[in-house]
Length: 309
Ligand code: NAP
Ligand code: GLV
Image 1 (spheres, rainbow, N blue to C red):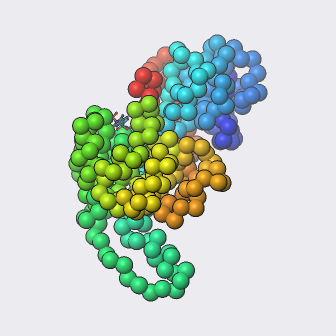
Image 2 (image 1 turned 90 degrees about the vertical axis):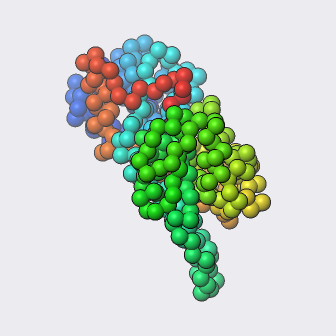
Image 3 (image 1 turned 45 degrees about the vertical axis):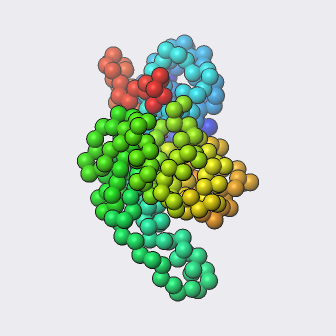
């Protein structure tokens, strides 16, 4: 029985150790060194090489080492009848909330202006704005989005959230579905995106959304790069409809050197670091899922392939 590690970007070392501790009788292999393909029972994947999950006749589950499953579901060679499991919580919401809160504070406290003023040795106070005057909107109120919304609300910002179901989150004004989107956007001076990437959410951070926000708003994207229509974001910033953006995720990663986001004065770029998966925080969930499957019990974090998340 073999566990196969498939990733174009992550090192296998911590997962090899975790699996050796938990399953000393299972072999651990790293793609493309698969060994006998019919012995592979579980695949641990993050940004897997396309096609790497095909032709594994005894594969019992695909365990994604992250919360977002868009890269796995978009693999044309993904086996149709094998469950895809994602990380749920697993240490991700806290760092995501820290990133989002930093972004909101950065904009609210005019830090970009002060960083620029310092370079010119300029001593000038900018207009102060109280937290209660900065309405924040969080798109996606799942395991991560709900934590993001609660943490920002706890700092005194009026926070609203938007999701499909409109499930309630304490201290947060919730809007739901297509009908709830425009009222949600109209009140959101800072828009924080924590949606999964699906056929319904692709391109959601585009011209129509920006136009529905108050003029001079801000966008923080920690969902996926393909949520953003890049040209629309630049147009909204250049026209003053938006005043700034902080982006952690991009349609192509690493962000190509020639991409205009790198040099736009109103855009802050970070290299997909809002919440990296740490084996120390997530291995117990992966191990638990393999144990459940070995005992014939239902696993945790099963992805609904039709919904896309
Ligand atoms: P989750 O628990 O599945 O939550 C997804 C949320 O999005 C739910 O509230 C869901 O609504 C909502 N949603 C989905 N489709 C929607 C639609 N069409 N319209 C409105 N709302 C919709 O996911 P999660 O664990 O919070 O993770 C969210 C995403 O964060 C991941 O998919 C990943 O892309 C991103 N992420 C990024 C990083 C990073 O480092 N930048 C790290 C981790 C995760 P319902 O509540 O009604 O289902
Ligand atoms: C990271 O981007 C994740 O989806 O966990």
